[in-house]
Image (cartoon, rainbow over all chains, first blue to last red; front, top):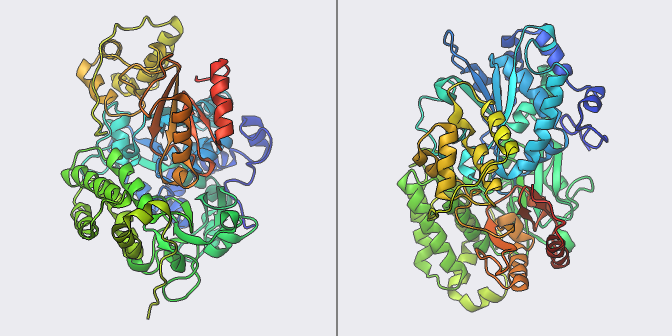
Length: 446
Length: 177
């Protein structure tokens, strides 16, 4: 099954309560960090661990921490990004819902490392029932002296609060999240200045994903060197993968980075194969924004090598024949699914979620939604496929935040690998309404 | 969001003492002078007290509570999809219809519910009981098809479970808060 660092105790009855969590080794990292380590040592340890941001972008967490400005007399803040909204991703919710103290423990250690005395967990508004769970756990932590003034007698003070969003995918972008926390619309800010210099209320701020912050706990407990031994050379540690779509056993799994994609999809301990014994048609391995892969590029790379669940192997071949680990939102398509319909569905999602600030994204996502809608509904023409590619190129790289890219990439990848299926929708509009195109024709790579 | 949203007038609700205390508590979560940060949570509390939606007058009240201008509240309330700006039914059924839920049959379930209740997405039943809405990814991708009703998720739905759920709503057994 591999090692579990985050979910080891998830099935222990009562693990959501302070006492049970503590009995299973909980809050040990707070004692270790606050009593025996200087804040800089904690930062160094996280740097050394090689932990990469688990929200999707994969930026090294320790490095991000080291950028935080420390002007005299200005407060600093740590914000936890619990706005999990990337289609296919539901891992952070699972962690917060069932083992909330792990996140709180990680928040204490991480806030200490950054010198923050007031930190927030920004959670998407739809997860209001999870917010209740977190606040209950936070109240316990206050009561037991792990939050508030003079934590464990070390002189370190920390207040931790939960702040909800209210239904906006864009607030997962860190500067939009900050805007939202300030009580405004979630319009991303132009960078620089980066949040590390000017973030929440103009103060130095770090924004980290739920899973990244939770992972700080095992890193401190076991030490960076031990942690870095898990996984592959470039992908250290474990990762939560949320598997969904047409698999036998969807759900959240903690994997050691570097296991094979084939084992994850078909293994008994994992997804247990495609539902109802159907054939695998496609995979989106890291949330809706990353490129889709056709069946022949999932378990093997274009070079014919085994494909692994790691940053480097999933992106092997670049966008031409690879994808990304992203957020770990693992979406599996069986042979009955229509790629055109799915691509349109995601295009509609991005059009709905664009904040409207930059015209390439505001207009471009709407165009892609419309053009894909007509292709899916039998009203498309051949030139629409080329038009999509053109619109795509005009969005990509031309916007303040990455939502534009996130909207463009899935469409580009779908056309790249499933062009025949798109063309078939144009040439056989009536048939396309009734049944599905089937698998993409295998391409051999020399 | 780019969806066109109009603002409707209806007099402000009278807040319960409990709600007032809740709002003060939420405001205390942010530093002195940063009351505006409490806006989303305050809007949730007030929306709940006002019958599930926000009128212009209700938003003006929030502006007064947080000591900001009304336009600051309008621009926020119109941006976030969880704030309803028109009257809604007692039970708002928000079906996730994004990719992963679609792969496991959300479209069919929405259609089934529309037929069952005799209304379309965006409409409310004549008795004011149910409103059907669609939502983009609710983070329940492995447990679809699903819907959100008030604060709670209802997952792994089938037509049979949908029937039971609607009946439970009619019997007043479904919690929304």
